[in-house]
Each structure stands twice: as structure tokens, then as C-alpha cells.
Length: 69
Image (cartoon, rainbow, N blue to C red; front, top):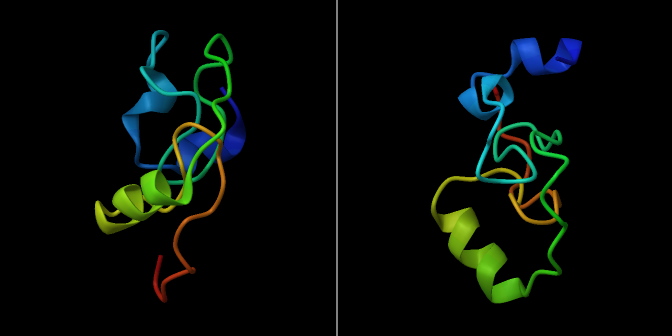
């Protein structure tokens, strides 16, 4: 496990079978076996409204950095 993953509160880093490729909290790869999926801006909008900072399919940053995070 990467050092920065130890600091991330998302539990997908600790799973051997994470259901997503990228972490929605830090953007790190959590499951290398999953293929990267090209995303549409509409799906990014939905994930952004859901509170994700990074896209779980492509790893792109969705939200601007928030103070205190």
C-alpha cells in the first residue's frame, strides 16, 4: 500500500477487490485490474454533486480543493 493511501480515509485502499479503479477522495489507483473508462461531463457532474473529489472511472479531479481538506 502506498504511503499517501495510508493518509486517505477512503477504505477502498484497504480492499483487495475494490469496485472502482480510482479513489473518489484522493484520486489514487485502488484497483489496477479495472480498465479506465472514458467519461462524459454529465457523469462527472453527477459525481461532483454526490461529493466525490475525483472521478472513480478516470481519476480526473472533479471539485476544486476545499479549505481544510
